[in-house]
Length: 185
Image 1 (cartoon, rainbow, N blue to C red):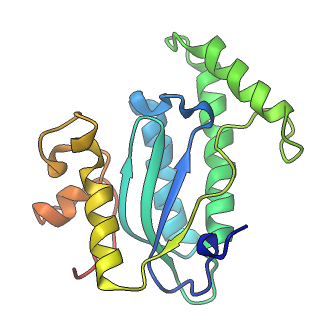
Image 2: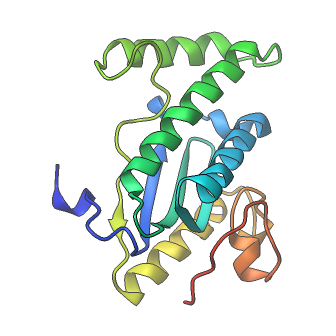
């Protein structure tokens, strides 16, 4: 694995990305976005995660995170992805209104069967691609990229109008869905 995808200083902000296998548009359903939000909240309250910025797109999520002293970003992300994977797959299985249930579960089962790290389903692509934001330029660039992702996707006109993002915290100085530790940019 390339050194650009390793965390060396867990107290520095890192831009991380997690993507659904097959780029499946799972997060078009609020039910599944809420699982992500609850899990991020749990990680901030119990796992040492410092959440600086976030956005949930239709098939991936971007975060800018750090870890509290004594915690490890990789371990937090591993636990987060493992938990959310199980919760979302289970929710899809139970969701009578999920019109894509068969297709999604087949894709997750097929991908899981071809990965020795999984027992049954694989929801997330491997890794989380941490990029250290060790300069003001990198931080501003990734911060802008993260919050403007829904604008580039044509979902909203302004970043702060997107519900599943920390843009409201930064651009309107209002509290969004999740508590964050704001960065000074």
